[in-house]
Length: 217
Image 1 (spheres, rainbow, N blue to C red):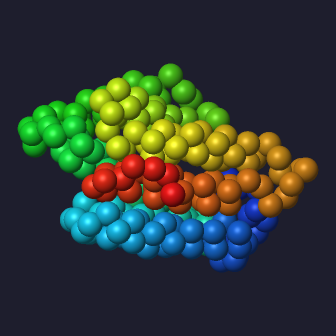
Image 2: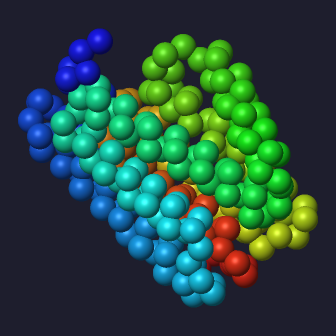
Image 3: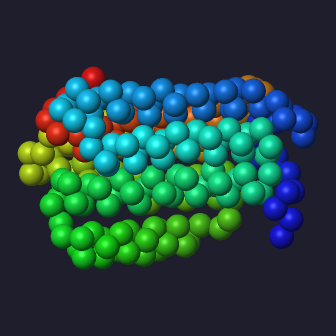
């Protein structure tokens, strides 16, 4: 496979140049703000734990990976983009199971393996490119919703932020999905909104783990 091959899958890209997707590229700054806001929220909650530093670093890497993909628009940049997103998903889930659900490390490992199997099963029926590629994000959306329900049933303080994250993620996923279908009517597309809203999703998810988190601020 030619990893330097260029990829053109967004409305905004009209040529192979570096700045052909200015909105899609520059809206990745939202992830830097989300990372800073995450650390600030943890600091206000008492202390910035290792979880927070790790999740904030991954949020910044997501922004960096996405920026590279929307500027270089190559296969290798796309792999980086996906890699950092997957890393955040698994690290967040592991932190939740350990910090909120209070599972032992062996159970956390089993939970992560179970999520991997769940993700494979949920996405297997979809052909490549289905829903403009958004089908691959259905497992983390489902996981967010399920974690929110679990936390709510136990009266845990993380429930409201997890529920809000799932709601915002639903909207952002819809905007990502329709990007290719609105090109004629809206040449800029809707993918840049996916970035902006996903920064909010990651902030809400990461701060749901902070001690004494009680409301969406």
